[in-house]
Amino acid sequence: MGRATVNISLWRPLLAVVLTVLATAGQTAGGQSFDAGWYDPAGPYLKIGVVEDGVYRLTGAELQAAGVPISLVDPSTLRLFEAGSEIAISVSSTGATLASGDAVDFVGKRNTGKDEAWAYNETPGNMSSTYNSLYSDTTHYWLTWGGSPGRRYASVSPPAGGTPNATRTRASLRLENDVHYYPGDGSSAGNPIYTRAEGYYHRQIRHNTSQTDITLPFSLQLVEMGTATTDSVLISAAITSET
Image 1: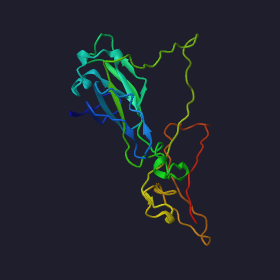
Image 2: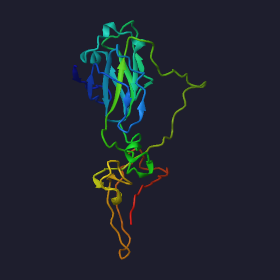
Image 3: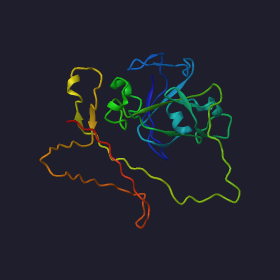
Image 4: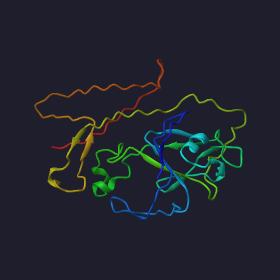
């Protein structure tokens, strides 16, 4: 099985590319069944690893360097799958087959813990955080070709009277550096399933009734905001406690 590293020149780096893989139907780590019907054992696949949210581009030259026979690929048949579902992509190509200057663009997302409630006995409220996965930060995408036409982003015409200028946008900043491990509910020690609140946290706070208030300073880099603005900022915090 061939393996290569691809560096994306325009936007963000892509991690590793593996040309073929054997997929089988079965159970997830939590015992949940899944449908591998999206996978065609006779078809070619390119495995793409993403560790950051963003817009990614693969050029025809990069696909060729990874082992894709671009001169035999009909661009309309390119399809991209994430977690067993096909997602829309944008393909920049004018020929009947892919060329080195063509490009495939897609929106990639890093792996999080949002689908890992099974590790907490299917109790989402027991999870320390869904921001980071317990196992991997990498989401794998599968690019295939040679079959039916793939999903594409639809072109939208601007409204009559010109394209409106965007004057405001909403930005979000999350401050979470999970470095402190908490073992969870002590009464469940030895349970292979994660217990209530078990996991990693940004910061540990110890307090008792004889103490005064605790002040915790944080520095937030609000780079999207101008030096003079009337925009409001909403700050929220998630805290897990025990007595």
